[in-house]
Image (cartoon, rainbow, N blue to C red):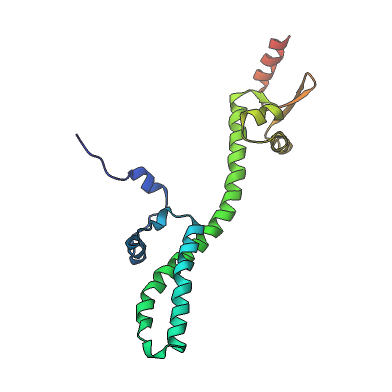
Length: 178
Protein backbone atom coordinates (compact mmCIF):
# COMPACT_ATOMS: atom_id res chain seq x y z
CA UNK A 1 0.00 0.00 0.00
CA UNK A 2 1.35 3.42 -0.93
CA UNK A 3 1.22 6.11 1.68
CA UNK A 4 0.77 9.72 0.55
CA UNK A 5 2.11 12.88 2.16
CA UNK A 6 0.66 14.04 5.46
CA UNK A 7 -0.51 17.33 4.01
CA UNK A 8 -2.28 18.09 0.77
CA UNK A 9 0.07 20.14 -1.39
CA UNK A 10 -2.78 22.00 -3.10
CA UNK A 11 -4.02 23.33 0.23
CA UNK A 12 -0.56 24.60 1.10
CA UNK A 13 -0.31 26.57 -2.15
CA UNK A 14 -3.56 28.49 -1.63
CA UNK A 15 -2.34 30.84 1.09
CA UNK A 16 0.85 32.82 1.44
CA UNK A 17 4.01 30.82 2.00
CA UNK A 18 4.86 30.81 5.69
CA UNK A 19 8.15 29.57 7.06
CA UNK A 20 8.59 28.04 10.48
CA UNK A 21 10.25 30.35 12.97
CA UNK A 22 11.57 30.23 16.48
CA UNK A 23 8.30 31.77 17.68
CA UNK A 24 6.39 28.88 16.09
CA UNK A 25 8.69 26.44 17.87
CA UNK A 26 8.08 28.33 21.13
CA UNK A 27 4.32 27.96 20.86
CA UNK A 28 4.57 24.37 19.58
CA UNK A 29 6.51 23.60 22.76
CA UNK A 30 3.37 24.50 24.69
CA UNK A 31 1.22 22.41 22.35
CA UNK A 32 -0.38 25.38 20.57
CA UNK A 33 -0.89 25.35 16.83
CA UNK A 34 -0.82 29.09 16.25
CA UNK A 35 -1.64 28.81 12.53
CA UNK A 36 -5.01 27.22 13.24
CA UNK A 37 -5.96 29.71 15.98
CA UNK A 38 -8.40 32.53 15.29
CA UNK A 39 -7.04 36.09 15.58
CA UNK A 40 -9.00 36.58 18.80
CA UNK A 41 -7.45 33.45 20.33
CA UNK A 42 -3.98 34.61 19.23
CA UNK A 43 -4.57 37.98 20.86
CA UNK A 44 -5.86 36.42 24.09
CA UNK A 45 -2.99 33.94 24.29
CA UNK A 46 -0.36 36.60 23.74
CA UNK A 47 -1.87 38.86 26.40
CA UNK A 48 -2.08 35.92 28.82
CA UNK A 49 1.71 35.62 28.49
CA UNK A 50 2.67 39.30 28.11
CA UNK A 51 0.78 40.76 31.05
CA UNK A 52 2.24 38.48 33.77
CA UNK A 53 5.74 38.73 32.26
CA UNK A 54 5.65 42.53 32.16
CA UNK A 55 4.23 42.77 35.70
CA UNK A 56 6.86 40.36 37.02
CA UNK A 57 9.64 42.22 35.19
CA UNK A 58 8.56 45.56 36.66
CA UNK A 59 8.31 44.00 40.12
CA UNK A 60 11.81 42.53 39.83
CA UNK A 61 13.32 45.79 38.58
CA UNK A 62 11.72 48.10 41.14
CA UNK A 63 10.68 46.02 44.15
CA UNK A 64 12.84 42.90 44.27
CA UNK A 65 16.06 44.47 42.97
CA UNK A 66 18.24 41.67 44.41
CA UNK A 67 16.66 39.32 41.85
CA UNK A 68 17.53 41.46 38.79
CA UNK A 69 18.79 38.37 36.97
CA UNK A 70 15.17 37.12 36.69
CA UNK A 71 14.79 39.63 33.85
CA UNK A 72 16.72 37.22 31.65
CA UNK A 73 14.37 34.43 32.70
CA UNK A 74 11.30 36.51 31.74
CA UNK A 75 12.85 37.96 28.60
CA UNK A 76 12.72 34.71 26.62
CA UNK A 77 8.91 34.89 26.50
CA UNK A 78 8.57 38.53 25.46
CA UNK A 79 9.48 38.29 21.77
CA UNK A 80 7.29 35.32 20.75
CA UNK A 81 4.35 36.70 22.77
CA UNK A 82 4.75 40.16 21.23
CA UNK A 83 4.94 38.58 17.76
CA UNK A 84 1.74 36.65 18.45
CA UNK A 85 0.08 39.84 19.69
CA UNK A 86 0.92 41.64 16.43
CA UNK A 87 -0.22 38.64 14.40
CA UNK A 88 -3.56 38.59 16.25
CA UNK A 89 -4.09 42.33 15.75
CA UNK A 90 -3.27 42.02 12.05
CA UNK A 91 -5.68 39.09 11.73
CA UNK A 92 -8.47 41.05 13.40
CA UNK A 93 -7.97 44.07 11.16
CA UNK A 94 -7.93 41.86 8.05
CA UNK A 95 -10.96 39.89 9.21
CA UNK A 96 -13.23 42.89 9.79
CA UNK A 97 -12.84 44.47 6.35
CA UNK A 98 -12.53 41.19 4.51
CA UNK A 99 -15.68 39.66 5.96
CA UNK A 100 -17.86 42.57 4.90
CA UNK A 101 -16.54 42.57 1.37
CA UNK A 102 -16.49 38.81 1.14
CA UNK A 103 -20.01 38.49 2.63
CA UNK A 104 -21.64 40.86 0.15
CA UNK A 105 -19.69 39.27 -2.71
CA UNK A 106 -20.82 35.79 -1.63
CA UNK A 107 -24.46 36.88 -1.52
CA UNK A 108 -24.26 38.43 -4.96
CA UNK A 109 -22.62 35.29 -6.35
CA UNK A 110 -25.34 33.19 -4.76
CA UNK A 111 -28.04 35.39 -6.31
CA UNK A 112 -26.42 35.32 -9.75
CA UNK A 113 -26.06 31.52 -9.50
CA UNK A 114 -29.79 31.21 -8.87
CA UNK A 115 -30.45 33.58 -11.77
CA UNK A 116 -28.28 31.43 -14.03
CA UNK A 117 -30.32 28.32 -13.12
CA UNK A 118 -33.60 30.03 -14.01
CA UNK A 119 -34.23 32.20 -17.02
CA UNK A 120 -35.80 34.86 -14.86
CA UNK A 121 -36.34 35.21 -11.15
CA UNK A 122 -38.53 37.18 -8.77
CA UNK A 123 -37.25 38.51 -5.42
CA UNK A 124 -39.35 35.91 -3.56
CA UNK A 125 -38.02 33.06 -5.67
CA UNK A 126 -34.48 34.41 -5.22
CA UNK A 127 -34.99 34.37 -1.44
CA UNK A 128 -36.16 30.75 -1.60
CA UNK A 129 -33.19 29.71 -3.76
CA UNK A 130 -30.52 31.56 -1.74
CA UNK A 131 -29.76 32.54 1.85
CA UNK A 132 -30.97 36.09 1.20
CA UNK A 133 -34.12 37.55 2.66
CA UNK A 134 -36.81 38.79 0.26
CA UNK A 135 -35.87 42.39 1.06
CA UNK A 136 -32.15 41.77 0.44
CA UNK A 137 -32.88 39.94 -2.80
CA UNK A 138 -35.24 42.70 -3.95
CA UNK A 139 -32.65 45.41 -3.19
CA UNK A 140 -29.86 43.51 -4.93
CA UNK A 141 -31.98 42.76 -8.01
CA UNK A 142 -33.16 46.39 -8.22
CA UNK A 143 -29.56 47.58 -7.90
CA UNK A 144 -28.33 45.26 -10.65
CA UNK A 145 -31.24 46.31 -12.89
CA UNK A 146 -30.58 50.01 -12.23
CA UNK A 147 -26.95 49.52 -13.28
CA UNK A 148 -28.14 47.86 -16.48
CA UNK A 149 -26.94 44.34 -15.65
CA UNK A 150 -30.44 42.81 -15.56
CA UNK A 151 -33.60 43.26 -17.56
CA UNK A 152 -36.86 43.95 -15.70
CA UNK A 153 -39.84 42.00 -17.00
CA UNK A 154 -43.45 42.30 -15.95
CA UNK A 155 -45.62 39.23 -16.39
CA UNK A 156 -48.94 38.37 -14.76
CA UNK A 157 -48.73 41.32 -12.38
CA UNK A 158 -45.34 40.23 -11.04
CA UNK A 159 -41.89 41.72 -11.51
CA UNK A 160 -39.20 39.36 -12.74
CA UNK A 161 -35.52 39.99 -13.32
CA UNK A 162 -33.53 38.21 -16.00
CA UNK A 163 -30.33 38.41 -17.92
CA UNK A 164 -30.51 40.42 -21.12
CA UNK A 165 -31.60 38.39 -24.12
CA UNK A 166 -30.45 38.79 -27.69
CA UNK A 167 -33.07 39.90 -30.21
CA UNK A 168 -33.37 36.37 -31.64
CA UNK A 169 -34.10 34.89 -28.21
CA UNK A 170 -36.63 37.63 -27.50
CA UNK A 171 -38.56 36.99 -30.74
CA UNK A 172 -38.52 33.25 -30.08
CA UNK A 173 -39.89 33.85 -26.55
CA UNK A 174 -42.73 36.01 -27.90
CA UNK A 175 -43.63 33.42 -30.56
CA UNK A 176 -43.69 30.64 -27.94
CA UNK A 177 -46.13 32.61 -25.78
CA UNK A 178 -48.54 33.17 -28.68
